[in-house]
Length: 407
Ligand code: C5P
Image (cartoon, rainbow, N blue to C red; front, side, top):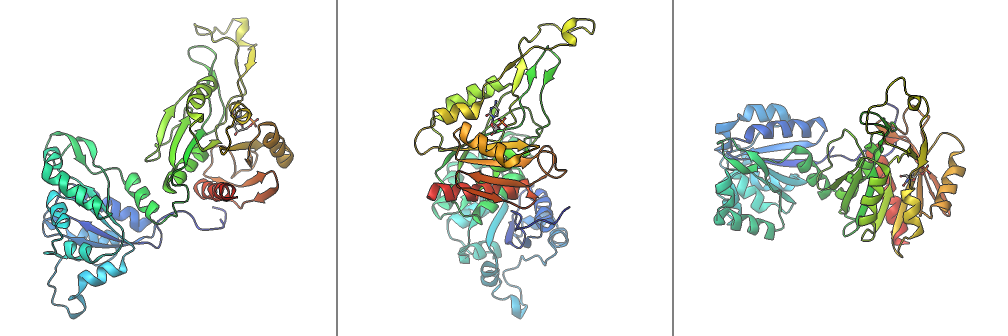
């Protein structure tokens, strides 16, 4: 990996106080603790008595690399005030899985075990991941308790739906780690895009030629996905209009899936009016076959050697032509030559505020790689960024967007 400049977005160096309670889902906490330790977060685990019936403190101690706490009345002189020291040292508290019992304890300010006393003493953000049987979750007592926790300013992550350990189907499972990680990251991220509605296009488009063939390009969608993920983390309401890609959906982002450029234009067209910021990160095919054959083209047919093409609509240029006051438009310019001149031409011709220029011939920039090196171009400024991960690049693009919004 080439040297990268600037911090990578992540949880490294953050101190997470990880409360584990007595649910069958406690085994999943082991994987989450390992993920946190792998990205060099500091994890201190506090287990309830019931949690130790489901998973051993030895396991969580080994995975976190730290001693696991559990006893309120530990007679070690340094640990007599454990609930106070633990709550002071942490940057945030995560309770996963959180049982109905622990939720009830916290909702009523109980302090009868180390975890509940520590949460009561904590003036840090608290994130709760309930996990239990659906009926327990939907019982008015639990619903009220969760509402009280929200009222305290705690973040409650809604449980996922599916088949539960007891065999019932419904809500009650722990959510995916990606969603929880994003929730934690948002706690440590300035919410400078809060209240902004952002539309991002991403990925390639696919232009059919016959039932099995199409014209497309090598875009992986990674840059657009990184933009969506980081914008959401900074508080924006994000919609991603995406061509065919093989990536996991970024948590908390509304997804609109399309295949062709015309479908992408239609989807964007219906959403654009209410958006504050629109970013065109998609590699939209410039041309499509004039005719899509109903039957598979035979090797012997003349059409197999000569394809008539027609132009696709330029989505960003269309938006630039009718942008409403206050709406900010960001385009990409994937270039192999004359980067800055081409970027400037697109800025002007498409009536954009910012163009992100990248070099598609570099081995670590552009299509289908994890990193990017871009230049940010506005009407009066050119800024060349270093080689960064696509997520760090996305954050730098949003930094520039926030600057433009403030000016
Ligand atoms: O002209 P060029 O394709 O290089 O412009 C790239 C920028 O325009 C990107 O922001 C891309 O998403 C957008 N674009 C578009 N519709 C097209 C072609 C490009 O929105 N048909």
